[in-house]
Image (cartoon, rainbow, N blue to C red; front, side):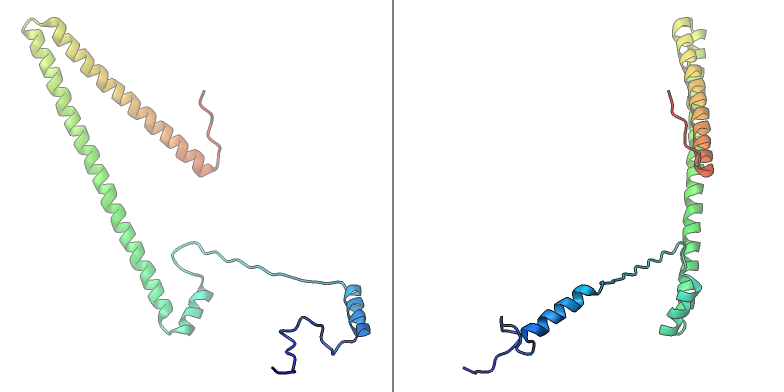
Length: 167
């Protein structure tokens, strides 16, 4: 075994400090106020592109990288707009087909009711016509109210107004 002591593995105080030296050290640190500071910074970006300063830094890392990032954002924007056109066109198409098929079904029921009345089945024919017209009027009123509520909700959201409580 070696007689040399390794100060990092020893539990004994270092012999470099005498008891008076260690007292002086603790007295001097207790008299000085401890000041510590911490700085936290946060940066957030909104939108498809980083700020111009960041793009310059990207170009410094690899020349042409900023241009590639801008092109990527442009392609993504074009792609998103194309998808939105497809979705809006599909929704419009579906709505138009719904109107056409609803009209055809309504004509079939009205025609059936009229036929039944002409064949002396007055109650059955009248009932079919009444239910058909009532359903059409109800659907129209419901759709109009839904659109009105949606417009009001969007307007309140846009203007930052809290929605009114329904009773």
